[in-house]
Amino acid sequence: MVWNAVLWLHLIAMAFFVGGQIMLGAAIVPVLRGVGDGEPMRAVARRFGYGSLIALTVLLLTGASMASHLHLWSDPKLHTKLTLFVVAGVSILIHMRKPKLHALNGVILLASLAAVWLGVSLAG
Image (cartoon, rainbow, N blue to C red; front, side, top):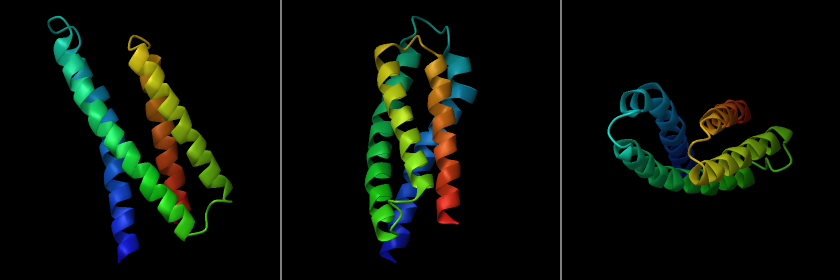
């Protein structure tokens, strides 16, 4: 029962983080790009950034808990997933400093989607 709740929290955080990226890229950015002085876009990105920090913290805590519980720390898939997590995190930090590097958005999304794929294969 407790581990179902931990997994549920992990999946909700993942859905917020990855789903939010897809929503930003597919709907929000195309609509808000070029609107006014760019402040609406910055406001949306800032709000999503705060939520993403919370989601990433939940992912890290619940993921580490599940990896320990399931004895997965030696699994190469988990190592790859953690590497992708770091790639996404470093890309986010760089993007925060240099928001004009739009290619980082793609790196973050691809690393996140690949991490989700690996998470599914770890669960199965």
